[in-house]
Length: 418
Length: 210
Image 1 (cartoon, each protein chain N blue to C red):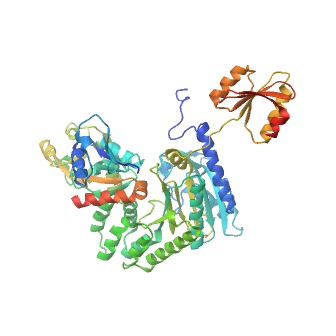
Image 2: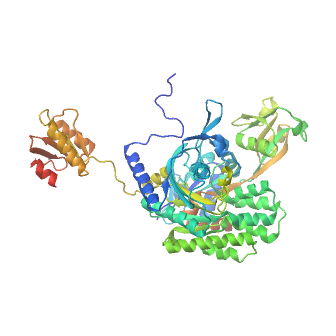
Image 3: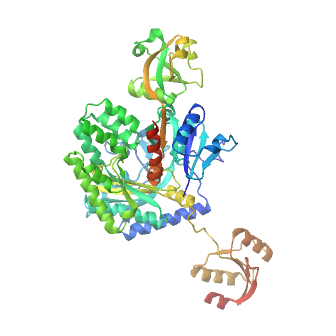
C-alpha cells in the first residue's frame, strides 16, 4: 500500500531552503514590479472545468492536461495556463469594468511533460495581461514590463525576440493552402525545419516568389534590418501591415531604452496557440528553453462571450531560477543573524531583547533546546549564524562572535542602539 | 567565450560527422587520439563535442546541454523533440518504410487488425493513425524486426531500409515509404538565438560542404 510514500510524483519537486528563498524573492520582485506599473493581481482557482481550456481558440492538447472528475461527473483539470482563466474572469466578472484592464498573476500551472516548463509537470508562472486595447503602445508596454522583470530578476544577458503571426497569416492567405497544410507549414517553420519545409513546398502549387519567401522564412531572424530585407519582396497588404506593426513596437521599445534587448524573428510561430498579432519569447544563457513567452490574443475573450483585444506574457519562474544559478549570479540565502541562549531566570529578558532586535530587522533564532554555550556555538557554526547572545542578567548579555571567536560583554541598552 | 557544444551520434554517423567538422576547420585531434575522454575540445575555436547514443542526441540538444547535434532523421521522428532542424547533411541516407509479405501489397487497407512490429513505435503510430487514419497494435522490438511477420508476431513491420536486401532475403516487400531518412544538423532553440553568430557560421560552413 505505501510503496510510493517516500517519493515525489513524476515531474514535480520539493523546493528546499535556498531555492525556495530565491524563488519567493523573485516572485516578490515580479509582484512589486507589476504593481508599480499599475497591474492588479488576481488569483484564479487551481482547478477549472475542462471546458475552459477546450474551446476553439484556447484548445490545449487534452493529453497534456491533468484531468479528473467532480462529484457530478464533470471533467476537471489542473490549470495548464493562467491566461485563459484570466480571459474567463475578465469576460465574466469584469465585463462592466473600465478598460483597458491591467491584470497580473503569480501561480503554479500543471502540464504533462511540457516544453515551457522545461519538462516539469508543475511550474510557476508570473505574468501580466493588458485587456481591452490593441495598440502598438500596449504591445510595447507588455514587452517592456517583461524586460524589466528579467532585469529585476538579476539577469543581464538575455534577448527578447519579437514576431508577428499576421505576417505568416498574410503569406498563407496568398497561397490559398488548406487549413491542414497551413498547420503543417506553421509547424515546420516554427521548428526551423528547412529540410521538411522545402520538401513540403515542392508538393504545393504556389507561385515561385511566394514559395521562396516561405522557404526562407525560418531564416528571417536577427536585428531589425530583417524587416527591411523582407520588405523589398512582393508582399500582401496583410503581411506588410504586420511588418509595420513590428516596426512601430520596436520604435517604442527604443524610447523605453530597451532596443538592445530585442530582436526580430518573423519565423516565430507557435504550433498550437491563440496568438493573433505581436508575439515574443525571451531567452538567456544556461537554460535551453525560453524563460518567457507572450503575445497578443484578440479572439480569446470572444470564447467567453466578450469581444475584447488582449495581450500579455508569462515568465517561467523556475526557468529563471535555473538561469540565475547556471550563470552564477549571486543570490542571497536565508541567513540567521543571532542565536539567543537563556536560562529560566533570563527568559523574560531574552524575549524582550529578541522582539526589539527583530523589530530592527535582525533575524533572531531562540534557543529552545536549553543548550550550553558550547552547544549553542557549535550549532551556530553549523548553521552559519553570526553570533550567539547569552543572557547574563536583566541588563547584560555576552556576545560570542562565531567567525572571530571573540567574546564581549555588552549592556542590552547599548546593543539595541547599534 | 563560452564553449559551443555539439552532440554527435555514436556509431556509423560519428566518423562521417567528425570528417565534416574537420573540413570546416574544427580541430578534432583529441578525438583522433583515441583517449578515454568523453568530451573533446577545440580550445582555439571554443568548440567541444561529445558522442552519445543516437536516441539521446535530440534530448541533449533540446535541454540545451548541447547547442547543436548531428543525428539521423529516424531518431528525430521517433523522439519528437522540440528543436530546430536546420540542415540535411545528406549522408547515411535510407528510407523508413512499411514492409510485409508480398501478398499484402496493395491490400494494406483491407487488413482489419494490424499488428506492427517495429523499433520505432512513435513513427509507426504517427504514420498509421495520422496519415492513414487507422488503428494499429504496436509491438515494440529491439532488433531483427524482419523476423516478426515470418513467425506471425506481426502482420507488417516499420523499419529502416537501405538497399532492401534483408527484406528480399526474407521474402518481404516494401508496402509504403514513410519518409526519406538521412543525417540532420539540429540546433537548440535558445542557442539558435543566443549564439546565432557562431551557430550560423557552422551551418553555413557545413552547407558549403554538401
